[in-house]
Image 1 (cartoon, rainbow, N blue to C red):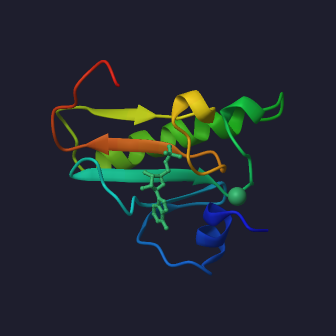
Image 2: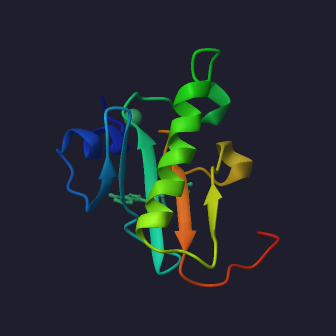
Length: 112
Ligand code: AMP
Ligand code: ZN
């Protein structure tokens, strides 16, 4: 498996862990765009949200719950943003589904 995030999950590429459980692993983004920038990835390799199947809704919900849990732990009481870049037009650069959790500053909208 040549997938970057699968290698991060199995530990063959180092990362800074933030949260983990049976279904997901969360780690610090290597190029943070906000004071808090965490990536939450399913342990199961799933290329993107566009590849989610009928058996994936619970897993997708779990990733959002994990984002909220991390935001609580990081005390992002003024709010935060959760992003799922999907495909070429969505700006996805790593083909293993990941949820961005961004917080710690006011974030502009709309995105570019
Ligand atoms: P996306 O553009 O939505 O596919 O996001 C991919 C994210 O992965 C970017 O924010 C990168 O900074 C991040 N990233 C790439 N390589 C690593 C790595 N080795 N460790 C942590 N984050 C990474
Ligand atoms: Zn993968």
